[in-house]
Length: 329
Image 1 (cartoon, rainbow, N blue to C red):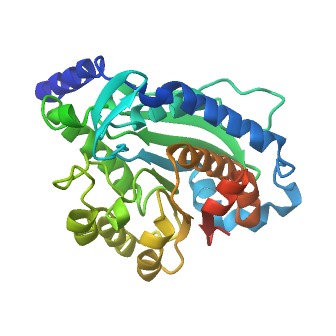
Image 2: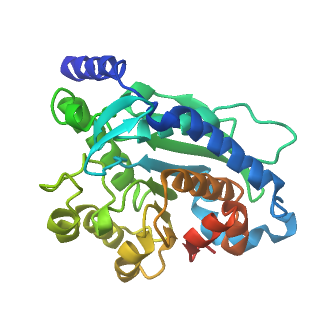
Image 3: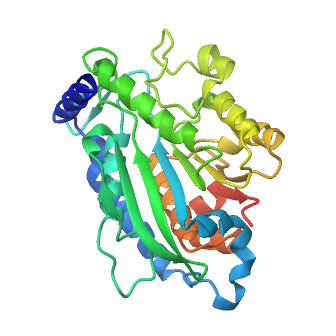
């Protein structure tokens, strides 16, 4: 126990030197969530479910209502910007393959814990946060009315990078990196077959994801898709094994990662033909994955399903064409 506490103290102390401001995501991420929430609010589809029609979506949310708790895992993958060269931004050299999800992690937790505005019928606010964000995991909780039932929402939010530095994460911060990778994997993979909704926002790794580790690079310093990820398919193989082994087949899995429909859909359907999914149909940038994940989260918290869920979650043509839900009805 003393060793564990000492390790956590060291990991927390190491966090003090971590930058979360590459590309100013610590600021712009929160602003983007705020602006996207405003788009949802201004949308003609921004209506609460008809009280007389709540049974329509009951099959999607029945477990959460029965248990009185909606268990959501939101896992940010190891979100590196790998271009084969050092990344220079705002006059600073961020090095090779810098990580960007720490700023996104702080943006999400910051926005969700903001007080709600009474005039807005939105759920992306008012959460109470617990846990130590310097250790890469927080719990966000809020009581909502879900299809006329009182339900406690618990969102376990994790991020995987020890710092923004690819080099440091495999050298001076390798112990912290191993801890965060293991913690992220435990939350994400541990949620499959148990949680009501499991959200992955990260890299598809050309079919090798979900991934919570620093990227494997080839001799040209690009991500080694053909030699490693496409051959080993470590992440999705683990997902499929868990889907097949689970007795709970009605949870929702989301993959906010590039071409996730192309990379994962067929294999997942073989593992569970009734699996409820949200997938991407195209290459997506970091901000679009953030927008779409927040849009779908808002829809889930409203108890929406089918086309109603899509109408809430997807604002703007790029998001509408870039993401699709499957069997969430």
